[in-house]
Length: 166
Image 1: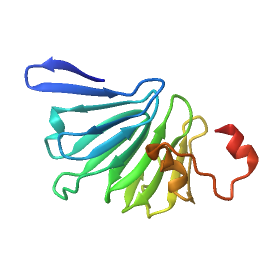
Image 2 (image 1 turned 120 degrees about the horizontal axis):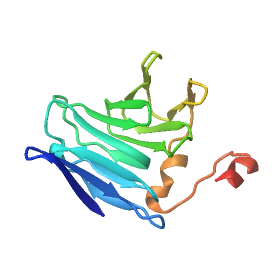
Image 3 (image 1 turned 30 degrees about the vertical axis):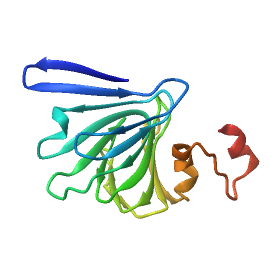
C-alpha cells in the first residue's frame, strides 16, 4: 500500500505500508530497495531528492541502498539515526521495544542523542533501549535477522529460550 500526504504544493510525503499478515517489497525513487516486515511503515518526502535521502521507519525494514556518495541515506528509527555508509542492513523499531540494527554488508553509522556515534562492520549489531538510555554493540550473525526477507527463519547456536521468544 502506498499513500501520499502533501503539506504544500512542493512537498509530498509518501508512506509505504505492509499489512499485518505479510511483508512487502518496494523500490524507492532513488533505486534503493526496501522490504517491510509485517505491520511496518516507511515514510519519505520529495522522492528522496535533496542533499540527504532520509526515511522514517516504524516497524522492521531490510534495506539494500543504492550507492550515492553525494547524497547520504539516513534511516530514522525511534530515537536512532542510521547513516548508510554501505548497502545492506535491517532495522527493527517496533513501538517501545529497543531499536536494533543488524549489518549484513558494507557499513553503517548509528547515532543516538547523548551517545557517541557508532560505526558497524558486517555481522555486528547495535541496540538502543530508550527506557534506560542504554546503547550497546555486539557481534551477531546478520543473516539470522534478515532471513525473513526470503520467508525463512534461521537459528544458529541460539538457546531455545531465544527461539521461543520469536
